[in-house]
Image (cartoon, rainbow, N blue to C red; front, side, top):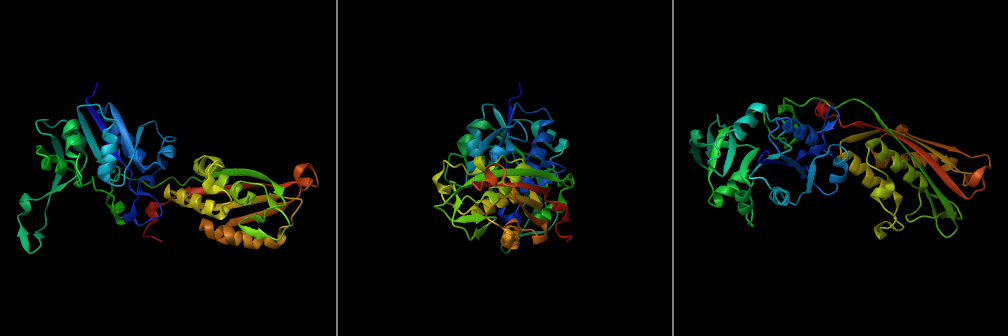
Length: 376
């Protein structure tokens, strides 16, 4: 049994990355970056356990991709690491950042096989350029650029992080706490993705798959003569509305399910349960905006949507253009990519009896093509 646990940190919000997507969800073919990194390191066979640390909202979606163990991150890298260490019971732990995507077998072997006669083993790069700190030129031979992953004695690392002081890597915490540190050669290809331009410096990453992901949604709501009617994000001139926990916009609810279906992210009831009072009477456009934000964060772009509204009443022909415009603005796509169709059921069934409205939606997504950044 291996005495080594791997912790992969992927809880960041990617603010400095400057894109709507979180960098841990960049697709490498069809795998998100976090899974790509975890899978590659798993192949080494060095680890008895792999823990991926991410935000609480990401973890349920991550579990549908790969059967790793997950821990919820904190507000900082250090807090995230402390949370993950609670689940480590091996003598040693290897900590890395998902953003350091290209860790070679040779670099990993140097770290894992180094003599374990210190509390932390650290990969580093030499500095080739002149280094000036404030107004003084520093001897570059004494400067090291520190990388991850770093291999630490688990209990020593836990003790070192039991402080209010903030550290940017494990070795700094351990040395400050009186521990010892040794170094091995790093790898210039193990460049960390911080800014979007860093993607051009990562040699092992290939473009995302060009496949189209499709989803469909269906929803129905009964009429209610005590509420106003909202349909397709538009207020309809009507003496009745829909019976629902939210504003009852059956078209947007159907569309949300289609988008979530294409992304493999469950359904509207999972994301916005009707048992939650926060969503009572809420404008469904706000729900759609939240779904679009999440879909973009998780690495998808919306291609087009097609919505079919089945209603004996009200008549919606006069509202279709406004619906298309409203939905297109929220989805961030052209109006021409939003299609609205209306039909009746020839007075058959509950729709034909004018008791409610049913809506079918289809949505198509693609993976965010990070390879095209700066080229268009």
